[in-house]
Length: 201
Ligand code: GDP
Ligand code: MG
Image (tube, rainbow, N blue to C red; front, side):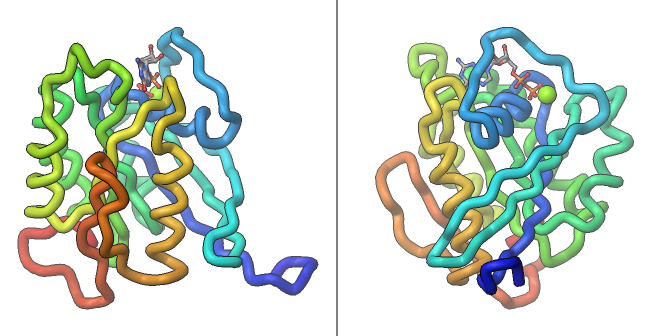
């Protein structure tokens, strides 16, 4: 409970994915509504918060931004061990960052609690002409792995608030079932134990 008697839910959200996919930009866009074109090298990890009301419940997102470079990968498990949500991000214009998602999911399987909810996010959706990963392909991958999926742009802000509203809804209202539009794909969420081979739900 907070001072006004309303329940506040705190969610620890950890951003993971290859370097330069836009993890820091996603967190800065969401918490400060800003975007800078300069590459900001993340050292280790950083932390910021923002609260949103979802279905009349206040949710405080505690967002941990991690560094995707090999040098810092070894400390990512430290952030994951008590996480509620992992946002696994790739860059829609860099195919290898999508191919590396499997490695990030493996790290989640090894280091995150079984109860973690996982969102696959294809960032830089504003760079349509440079796209190397189709929405359909990522959607299929997300379906196969039981992940929630959304494409975002930290640059334009597209779907950033939506992403966190949807994550919040999973905790407040349970499974998300409907597709809002072609680029918003919601997949599985359930209270059942994870099926074999699935990273998180
Ligand atoms: P991180 O290493 O994953 O934290 O990536 P950064 O947030 O530092 O972003 C890497 C680069 O991609 C920077 O030059 C950003 O300005 C750029 N960037 C991040 N998000 C977007 C986006 O949505 N669209 C475009 N066009 N560029 C982006
Ligand atoms: Mg960063």
